[in-house]
Amino acid sequence: MEIKPCKPYISKVCGWKLLRLPGGSAFKIYYVNLLGRGDPEPYDWANSPVKQEAFEAALAKLAPEGVGFVTAFTPITKIFRFAPSAETIMHVRALNTATMAPLDLARPDGYLEFACYAEAALAADEYRAWANAATVEDYLSSFSTFAGGPVLKNDKLAAYAQACRG
Image (tube, rainbow, N blue to C red):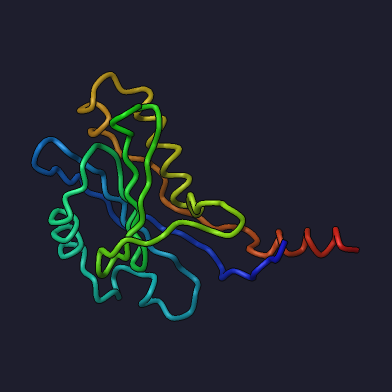
């Protein structure tokens, strides 16, 4: 297994909003910054050329169907929805935040990218809220309390692989 180095990771949820779309579709948007990476512009909504209002308008124009939530980072956006075919399953799709062009989540060895730390934490909270809600409106009325956080060490997998090789 080839281990590639990754950048430091500190996430911070910097805003949220409920986006209701025609036909009953609705998505909770979580805006997330990544901090500690040097040049803040590519990872910080306050410095991004993409503004949240323009992002919301572009997302509304895209008109995703369903109910769920969105993780919006400045370079990548993921839409998570509860599957219309089986609402205990969560679908995910990825988009370039600036252009709304689809992004491929396929990764080597037949895997698909699911989530970074912030996305996984938000997904856990959102799925728990979905499971505990009596109605869709109950689900839509609550937002995750996840505020963000660091990955303590971003090189532990590489260190583990090195130790295994001896």
